[in-house]
Length: 46
Image (cartoon, rainbow, N blue to C red; front, side, top):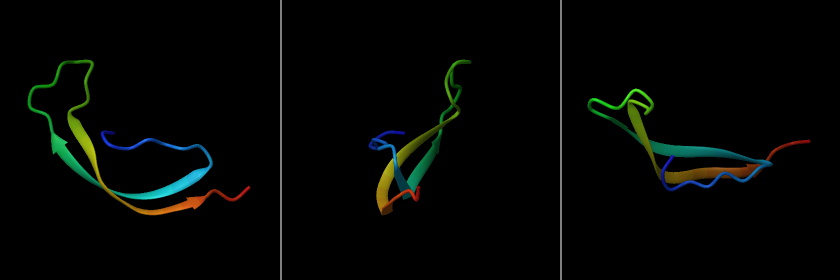
């Protein structure tokens, strides 16, 4: 996903924008996801 870097041990709630890709190559996803905003961020429980 564009604009997001995952950190292990953290649980995120995200707002993303999904944009369909017209005629994607066979090895590419047909939807592009882009981060709009991080809604919440919490450490995962052990």
